[in-house]
Amino acid sequence: PGTEFSILASKSLEQVLDAARSGVTTIGSNLPATWARLHKALALDLASSPALLPDTNVSLDEDGCIDLSMVKYFRDTAPILPGCSCPACQDNRYSRAYIHHLIKAKELLASILLFGHNLHQMLLLTKKMSVAGNDLSSLCGRIDKQINLNN
Image (tube, rainbow, N blue to C red; front, side, top):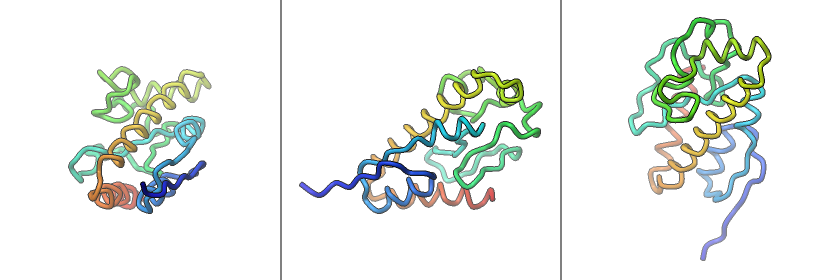
């Protein structure tokens, strides 16, 4: 059997992607909770196509997140991430505007919904990375492209 490498604490999505590209098999991270505390939601298009999110109201930060505390989400009726199947997004259950309101009202539910969404998206990302095989660099490249085009 080959040697397995582990990273216990990744502090950014870039570190996660770099570790995966380098063959690290176990990556530990508290990014979903950290992003939730910072009012951020992971908003990468993890679909098979390399297309970016069609929503022009979305600008991703260096971790591929949107900051729902920003005033531009005040009246945004879209779910956190259209097409996401997490409990916060599915069936358009909670809008960006509602989560923005929860953040401004300092309601704990905002962090709970954002953490659930971020965890769901990170699990989806790691699943896609684990089954990508030889296509891993292509997947990471599509993610890098989304982040760089939005910054």
